[in-house]
Length: 371
Image (cartoon, rainbow, N blue to C red; front, top):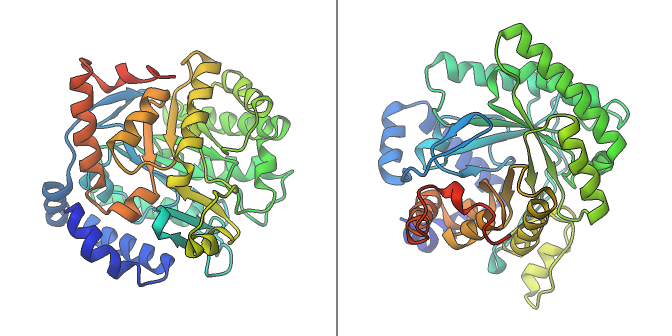
């Protein structure tokens, strides 16, 4: 199936504008999500072998998830597990609906398996996403795999009011998330990365955890796991400051990393034209950088803080590299664009083989062995 996608379907899709092709994918998966027959069919075609992970008090069928940015509005929540993913992270969701940045805003560097995007948190807003997620549950189509929600800051909200913005979205969506990710590292909202500064992030996390406990008590359930997503460009001092906030605010983990504003050297003129665009770079050129950030976090924390690793995963070798560097879970985005819907099955089949060859009983035993 992967060969069919790469040789026939992908060239046809890549004739379209990147964002239009993305919308076509989400629309197709949205239709699939509404039909138990179609989900069963896709499960037979693309379902992954199980390689369970228990983390954050949640049971993950396998450690590979869909990263934030693919399913911004929760339009295909039921379908991700049917095509082999062990969890999904929807969003980024903002408190207020917003159109995002002007188009075009997504670009492919095909020869180097990379994307540049400056989407700008385009989404329908927390209230309407709440309604959409409620509808999946009412239809009895909610997946068995965990669903995370990535929270961003609304463009119209000042940096000073950012804590209320994040916490407001969390309160609206609390009942639908298995875990939340505080996104302060997207390069596509002006000033957002300033929220990675310790004093600003401290305020956001404090108010979000206050709301988390309030919702927990109101609903008679345990608080939701809260993670923070960081940029790959942080220096050691900045990273240390963020890591110190994790025990202070009882965070459950860290997502490493978001897209990068840096660009690789290239002799390919088409790729250079893409790299000249403003926005965040994802895909193969980000792979080594994100892995090194994962390794650094694992070493700095003694492996005590769970890491979700994301950036440049295209095959089981890439996935194994992230896990052995210290990631307990992994995510992909660009890999799905270039490799197609069979990517999860391919990666998980390879990871299961690697676990067996290493003499491990579980994939968790491999976490950090090469850190």
